[in-house]
Image 1 (cartoon, rainbow, N blue to C red):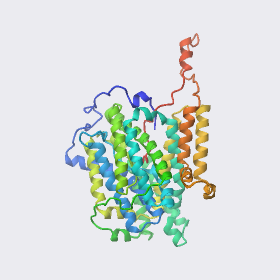
Image 2: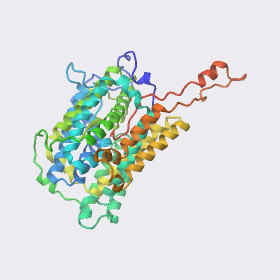
Image 3: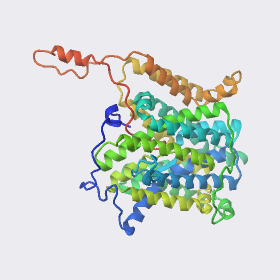
Image 4: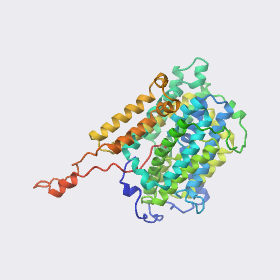
Amino acid sequence: MSSTTDREEIPSEPAAPAMEGTAASAYGLNDMPPPQKAIPLALQHLLAMFVGNAAPPLILATAIGMATGEVTLMVQLAMVISGVTTMMQTFGLGPLPIGARLPVMQGTSFAFLAVALLIAQEFGIAAVFGGAVIAGAFQVLFGFSLRWIAPLFPPLVCGIIILVIGVSLMPTAIGYSAGGAPAEAIGDYGSLHHYAIAALVVAVIVGCTVFAKGFVSVAAVLIGLIVGYIVAAVSGMVTLDALREAAWFQVPQPLAFGMEFYTGAVLVIVALALASSVESIGDLTAVARTGLGRSPTPKELSRGIVADGVGTSLGAMFSAMPNTTFSQNTGIVALTGVVSRFVVGIAGAMLLVAGLIPKFAAAFNTIPYAVLGGATLVMFSMVAATGLRILSTEEMNRRNMLILAVSLGLGIGFSMSPPEVFQQMPQDLALLLTSGIVPAMFASMILNLILPKERSAKHVELREDGPTGEDIEEAEQVVETSRPIASVSPSSSG
């Protein structure tokens, strides 16, 4: 997540037209490849994001003890809503200011998983969707007022938020690697064969990412899951009950799991939704710069964030977790040179069709916990590593180090604390603090606003006769800290 200036991200003047005929682009933004090329390219986008899209609802549903059919339905709903929101993002909704009309895939966000687990365990799954439907409305407002709100989320703040999200999710991945709830039920939790399967998945993912090229590298997580699944099946760890019970076709019904509203749940999801919107700014920027050779226009950024919000609220109405842009698909745009939004739109249509066939979702539900644990360990760790990469773009002077230290102390401290720490607190306040993400977010935002900015002399050019007065004056200017981020995590972002 490299950072750029505020002017670059939200320019005051419209950006240059899309360079659709550049040599770097095999197909331009509004080009439609022939079907024999468009379909394989779309499938590539779908496979690259499928695991990241299906994993959050699967983890949430299994963690709170949903029945097999309900788990399958949660994954199915995520696929349907992600397909709809992807098409909305790429094609737009007619004259409405919704959708960036850029080649961006939408999927279920890992950023909300940690707090969704807490909310679902405390209030029930319906409270997650109640908070999400309101959070989506706030994202729409964020999109329409982007120029004024985005400076509240500079790279320093976003890096801290994403780092804490990744760290807070890591224990969940380790629990899955140990065998998860099924292993606990039979007294097999933490056995070495579970860890061995998880370690194999991690090794395959790392090997594909480092030593392979092209699509194999991009789809490393999917390949790791397939290899781990095969080994687990040979070892007798796979059961196909969910697949046999699932229907061949099912149209999702609104409010399948209900909707309830609790103040604490709403506040925490709204806070994360705003942070997720800033991540989407980075994805939209990365796609435009990588594929089109330009920055996104203010209209594209605004419409993209509005689409995020509409998708999140729509998803909540159909019992799907919040949606966001997926950054791994940005890499595919750069890899293939195909910038066509129609290709990504076709991938969204494929995702929608797959979501209407419950057996696709049920197949994912047959993956053993240890296999999923190895894959999620890498994905959650990459979320944290992306936060560190964002922070590395910032000058770590005393001011920024202090903001980082206090925010991480609160964020990681609260997320790792035993439940007894929160017993004497009001329920809503305890919920805001338990995940650690919200206190880290607000601490970093407030400290970044109130602490005086340090002066920097790193840009002074030393001359033979020493720096001039103008050099010294320029070097003493306040370091800019109000820039939105320019790329996002693979999770969030996904």
